[in-house]
Amino acid sequence: DLLLLGASPEAGSAWVNTKPLDGESDTKLRMAVAPTSLQLEGLRGPEVAERLARFDGTLLCELPNDKVNDFVGRLQLCPSGPHKFGGARVTVDRDNMLLRGCQLRNTEAAFGMVVSAGVECKINFSGKKLGEFETERTGHIASAVNIDVAGVAVLLVLVCCVGASGAMIWMRDGGNPWYLALDPPPPAVEPWTLLETTYQFLCQLGRFFLLSYQFIPVSLYVSMSMVCSFNSYFVTNDLRLYDEEQDEPCRVRSMALLEDLGQVTHVFSDKTGTLTANHMEFRRCLVGGVAYGSGATAISAFLDAQGRIGRATAATGTAPPIC
Image (cartoon, rainbow, N blue to C red; front, side, top):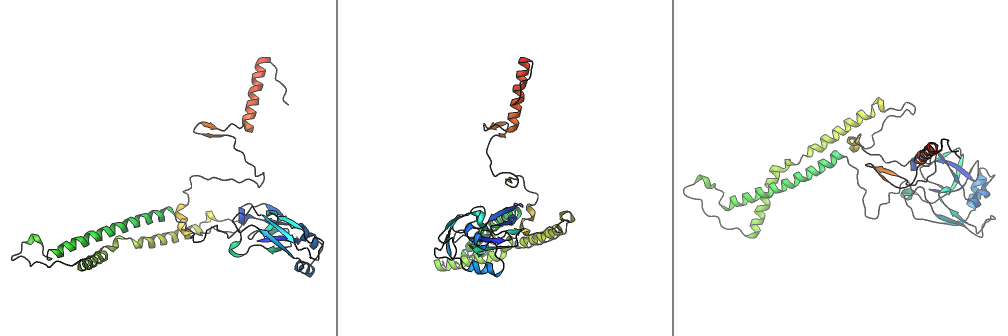
């Protein structure tokens, strides 16, 4: 992220496209800091680099954050600088910033001071706190399979515990079936100590786990990955998803989310500011036949005016003038 100090050919302004940041495709104007842009006006080539190297000052600004449409800072130039604006204090806002990811338009070059770099840039800033991990996005099918596999794992543990308990009872009775009525009866087994009982139980628990571990469908994840791979191939090579003007095919960036295509039920969009002002007021909302809000819209005002005109015409026989 850069603080715009000057630009070429217009020293005080630069045009940028911020579509990678906020999704808006219109070109925006960014203004250079006045004291520095005036000093760079009319300079070319090495003269610009020499003049930039002579600037001396301090920038006090906010900590790195993910707010691409907001910036607060103050630039204080050194009083002993060689320029006439020495000691000036200038407020810096978003109109003076060139964020990483934006593209220059109708501007040959832009000169700026680095404010943030690397992961501290607004386009890369994720807002995670220290010690937090980024959660991986998964589709509905993968989430349902994870829940089912966890339930199967709990069932496997229960089966192993029941089997190990039955084996311990069997071994306590001498390992001979009671229903065979052997004659003579089997010799009595000496009672085990607590350590021996624990050891035998763990051994039987491991034995039943080896016999029953196929409860968990590990191969199901491999099958799901193969299905997603084939699905991504068909999506990429679908001619109906090909843009001829841009010569750009459809690209699958996350195979795990392919099953969510077409499952969108609601889209909430706020796309203002491109051709209109970013000013929205709640006036009226109709939910289930019940109207909320008392604000009058343009349509309701027009209908009310038409109703008043109709009532006045019916009463007097002439239409009143409309101002």
